[in-house]
Image (cartoon, rainbow, N blue to C red):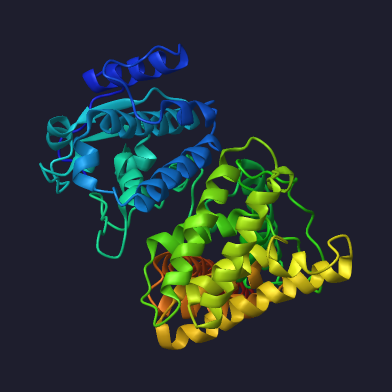
Length: 475
């Protein structure tokens, strides 16, 4: 990547700036000029752990949704505002700090001039705010082609990304959707299989995945080969942990495939992001959907800010009546064919917070199952309707439900089918997962071919040795 070798880890002016930002923050000292969302930053519990980046990503999503609702999500104005600019820089510095800690190194930040000098082949754009700085987080020769981290890129994508606002990485390829995923992909032990890990997998799950991967490779060598790529995909997605903000319960033990799992809010957090981020034209129900979302978003923002499980968040009778009224508007929009309304209504039914749960006995397990089925019906209706509207969000959600066994029996083949449908209809994240599956399968196929070649080579050597011995015996 670089024609000129970058220096070893030393302090730069940006590194000093990053350290000062952090010291001011942990000492609760106000930054000169102030920083936007400081109180919410402190609520994120920035403890320099990898999982804390999930909380940071949720904050970025909250800012995006809040400003979108007020129609003030103007990228140029926000980046030019010094308070928000400091916020984005602080988040980038913090993500770099977490990444460097994983590498057991000191973060070294470069400005754009230094990047150009040390990495002249990188196509930097002078007017691109997200390429203004990058961090060198290791000196490993093994990973020399991936030693820089442009931390502002995933922040920009999560905050401003849309169909009309694409983000391309200066290092090539696509930008990770959020800081957690971006840092996860740069861990010292990252490999091709690791990219299959969903953005909400914690370190324990990653360890389990690595163990299972080793077991599968061992089985393959013993002649009991399985489709490791599919197994990794189902294992990864079905064992994802709850979000750090919505930790309703501990991750459940894996159940038999004919059972269904109680849904955790993580995939629905992602759904809410996609409903804002991926805009799909609708033929009807737009006004009912807009009014319903305007009310329900207030409830979601309130729940996200609570430091307690979602099921323990209580609302007054008046607020609950307003929520039910919003759900009725959502139902009307869904009945009119609005796929976004179908998906959001399905989310609440699957969480046990929809209209169905209010008309049944909540403590009855049979009725709970009925609520789950009502949610599944809406998702399937939206996914099948998507054949005309190209609404890939429904197809991606249904693929996750089949992979995880949420509301439906776990079915890897069905999950794969809907994943492919979502990718074909333009869902970027689904396309990335499929590409990763193909890469993993290619690695397996290559390894099997190598093992087969080795066996053939061994047989050839054996034949030559036997021939030589026979020659010696008879000559």
